[in-house]
Image 1 (cartoon, rainbow, N blue to C red):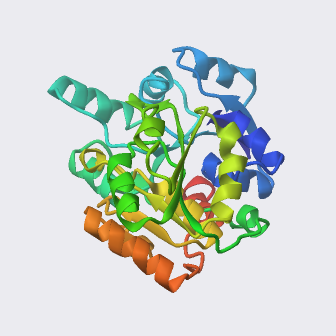
Image 2 (cartoon, rainbow, N blue to C red):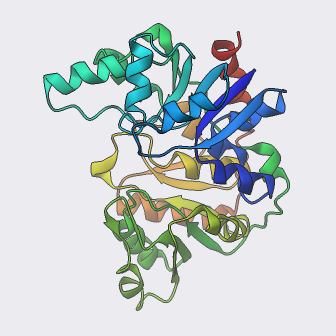
Length: 325
């Protein structure tokens, strides 16, 4: 089977160099490992990009790891109208942001194009079905998870510091307050800015807090090996999320890192995270809950063993019944 992947092929190149895990490609590497031919192409915000890619050669299916309705508008329209007959399979990460009836009708039309939609969260899927954007029999939650083979080659230590590596809708104020109170060591790795959030003031905010170090990096996957090494040597991972932004499964990448490295994790309670998946982690909301979780990890010094219930291999096994079944 020849699969047209439209996403971020640079991640695939870094995966081949053992610099990042395969789950960032949402199963496409696992497709290739099973003997399928994957044609790695870049997503572009150009209306004709997808059509041009389709004209290069004959593809059996199209796989889009993060379906952006604007970037893929034309191919979705043509597929919905039956002009393009190559089946589309995609991950939909967010519920469509709909404010008008006209937009709702348009989104329903566009989302009728994929043969099957995969979701990262059960709640996102349920909300999309309830809103009439997708039909229940055309979507599923395959259980996106860590590339266990990748993490198994990483040497881990039970270190002396906690670490935050995320950049998406992070609440660093509550994190700083909690670590001020405990005095525990914390390393914060984040981008200078991301999706409208500016974090450059973090250095000033933490300049008088001796137990907190801040590392502002470029907004690029190139820095992941540095963060991975720091995570592997940490005591635990922390993931503080902005309460007003808990309308999708933000924080899931950090969950995958914690699962892959078998590290304890403190994370803001998010209804879009599966209860079964996060039950072995510390779920917090308030500063006091953060402090209690930090103290518990310091006291117990445990390594979290979640048993790899979720992995990208298992995810692909669940996906392929719809793609090749």
